[in-house]
Length: 290
Image (cartoon, rainbow, N blue to C red):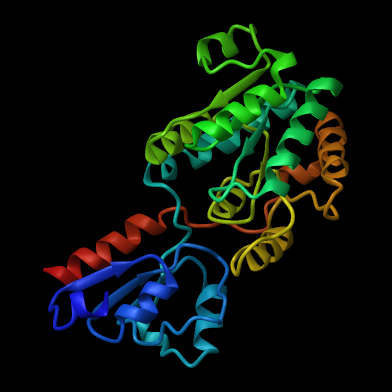
């Protein structure tokens, strides 16, 4: 990879610290660090510019000895299609809370499909459907095998892939599946205004927890370098229902009780976050290329 970019005169944009470490040795690198977490295991010091979502993220990199003038705080890096919907999503969820409507829970499968996460999604979905506090949406991931696994595990509830059938009450379970990862993400974003609780890993979607004040139960264990730090920050600043590994039902129960009682926790925001990180970064990158 280094050989391919050796003596390349343009700017190479990367979104993974390992690539920043490798390519920073041979060409100009703009490193897009989209997550809150700032693991110190990677050497990104050769990156010409480093784009980070929060001041806290920047300070962690500065503590590594990276010059502050190379770090740009952009705001949370949400999917561009989601950025303009943040206020709407928060408002619609609070309207449902005040109206005493049942909550809809969104379950989001992780990209690597770790077995503990998959089984927690199935366990949590089955519990909600039996207890009957509301409907559920499961984003199964792009793999057909994962889609079939979820479909089989909750077959007794007659899940559907049709939003129309879901809206008309023909099924309480909507399964999202698309082999194209980008199209699946767009489906998730389209349905986010309906979600009252998100059950997901503490990876990139942690940005949803913060930007949308989205009530969240994080899947355990926290896997990889980023997830533990994302989890810690979101738990401190977001509406997160914690639980010990292996006890996800306890966290879901806490949410159900809080939703039913219209707890003030749903109106409490630790801070306002700029959701336009991708747009802010793009403006700077375009100017650098002119």
